[in-house]
Image 1: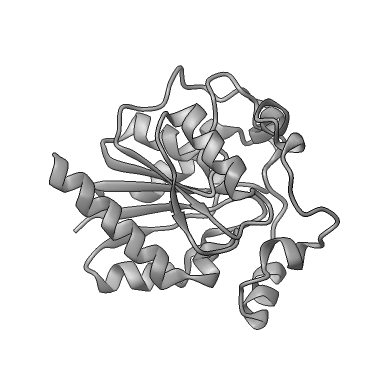
Image 2: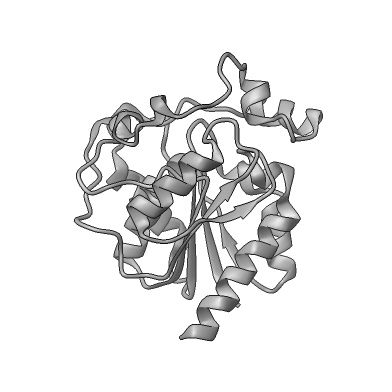
Length: 223
């Protein structure tokens, strides 16, 4: 049994994980999937981390997952609380002192070959059932807050926690080749891969829950 701490990305809420949560609970795990305080423009990454830590409470045996922009918050949780595993999912893996607003330039994102001129539906939801995609877009929020985008990422290095990076082979926002490179450059590891677009928790929730449990089992077998 573990507690999966699921941190959503930009423009999103904890609802993003609503199909993954029952899959993990069916396997005997606890799940925390809080809403980040994106509507507060004074909120910085520390405020985001405070919200997640508050939602965790006294839970233990943490597996902390950061999806997309949630990658800036997830390591902060592992720095504050004991965690068994840190997982990035299509994650904007940060570097020390880097402002989230600068991540696109610092990673060379604009130099990467990718499909251009796509609308949000084609970029994010091409493999998500249409009704589910519509509901997700209806729930979209302004995010990140101005404070969370402009403040430097505060850690001097990644926490000393076993770490995995799961990238999506069919991601039209973050092409798989780009994500392989960023994972290697910033974490020093090879990325794991899954057949999915960017919103994998909506398009392949069962497969994603399976991957999370596999990562946890592998980590525990090595400890």
